[in-house]
Length: 112
Image (cartoon, rainbow, N blue to C red; front, side, top):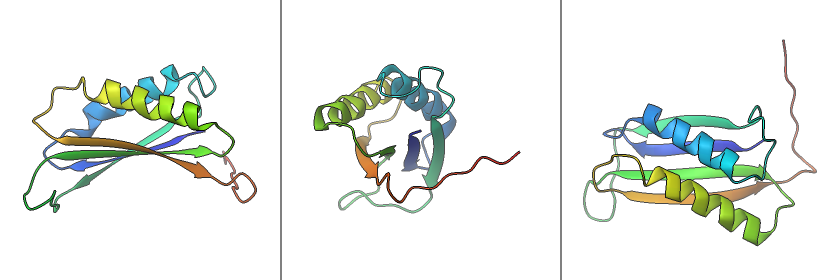
């Protein structure tokens, strides 16, 4: 179910990050092992600033249904971070956050 949203500076190739985030999310073993519910999308930014300079960045938001422990969420964020930092990148800031989606208000439909 997770929604993995990769925001990054436009100098970084998002298509290289997508499989790393997908595989590391699957490797966390917190989701269906078929991987069919893992959704990954990329948002490159043309205009950005990190501190007082223009510098490359990657920020990954992992939106998951509520109910996981703090330890599970930390494991997920660290697993994703470890995989993403293996990519061949210019020096950059890499961050990962896990956000709970409230189960009581979440709605979903799959159309065909």
